[in-house]
Length: 440
Image 1 (cartoon, helix red, strand yellow):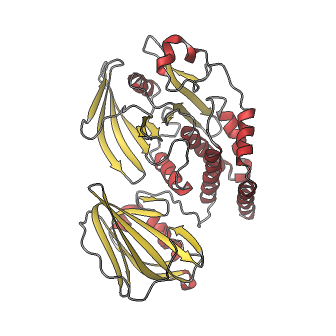
Image 2 (cartoon, one colour):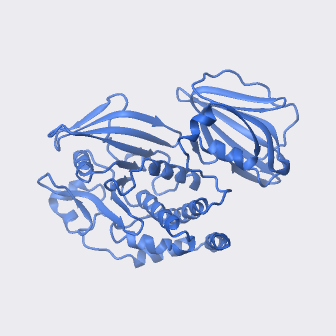
């Protein structure tokens, strides 16, 4: 255990040293210079040029995915095999309108169980990906050129990602398969997610489906070009698998793993910011894997959710409260649920709604601002500001409130009630004691 703590401490120190020294750009350039490009002649054939979204992003000949049941076997997609981690990904560009049928043919032939989409269809006014799956309004889409029908079975929309279950039918044989579609909707092009916790929660949601395992074909991961955001997702997932397998975070060399992945697809991770974020996400994920209870990312266990949502819980240890809330559908520094009720003596805050409620704690101490999931280890007695945002018909209603928490001896004298399927009822007055004035 001491060795694990020392390894994590070393990782943190290395990260801080790179931050303070501004060395991320230098590391990014080292990786780019040490990457070996292989040939990509097939991508440059005249008949394949209109199948590439970008002229300078091409699959290597040795690792490109080849379509089988079609005259032209080319698709801008690369098979990335990480043997020790037992992970196989297909990294690909966002489909073009003329390649959507090829995209579904590839998924069928590769026996893929899940698609991970890390971009929006339109970003900054430009199309980054064709609409290759049916919306809730149309319910199904046909791709006659390759003989497939895609139907939308279900759609679960959260604040920063959407999970869909699609039915892929081969029109030639009549066979049907269910495909998971995990869509991260708030990751900017050439940018990074808002926090490692939000990204890791999304990654664990994908893992929870079992689609990344060896029992299924390779998971298809795409953004717009299939190298920046897609490379970040695959790198972090692979590193965390190896850390969990070896039980030694210091044994996993992130740079070496990225260089190995770049042998399969060019240019994985496009900016120094994406590289920095990848390291940050791996370090935070490693802490969770190695049992650091302070990490605010919890892999939700489905069996726990009904038990917690059906009753009120008197919570004393602050970590237990944090862990209970994190078993619910959650995000970075936030808890998403249909209703959250917090009681404390004369302070009573209640908000209900059929739409999701964004419940975020902002903790203030001295001149510092913290975002947390009610992880209160660093304070004894303080106020927490709660912003409740009710999303309804695309309108946002923000209600800032204050309530007091007593953190003496790491206990919280709060009662947390969690319900589902309620309507908006009331918002009772906050506690009369004046709150600490916080800088916004």
